[in-house]
Amino acid sequence: MIHPVRVTALAEADLSEAFRWYEAKKEDLGFEFLARVEEAVQTIARNPTSCARVIDDARRVLLKQFPYALWYRLEKDGSIVIACLHHKRRPALVKSRIRRKPEDR
Image (tube, rainbow, N blue to C red):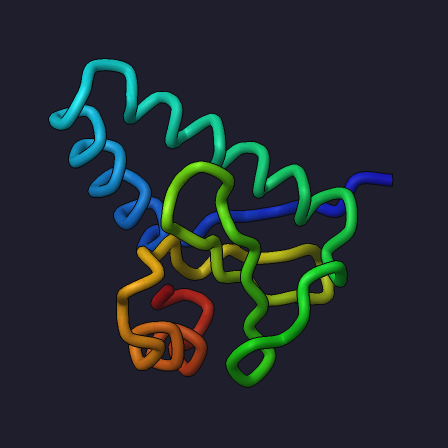
């Protein structure tokens, strides 16, 4: 059974920003980035507990080929991606998103 995965508005904004940056660097590189994101989402959907908790109850799955990770939390009705961040970003951003109310993420 596939575990549902939702992406927050803030995580969508992260994805859009990274897509635009990669697409500006090289044509179609942004689409390659999104393909790796989709692979990571499928990893979460297939086995959401395969990634260890890193900060509080947030887990992360590393993207192949790109220095980014999807940060997510397990919820009763599925997983929720709260961020897509470059490896060099400070973990404080993940902490602030974890503490937000679900409707504010």
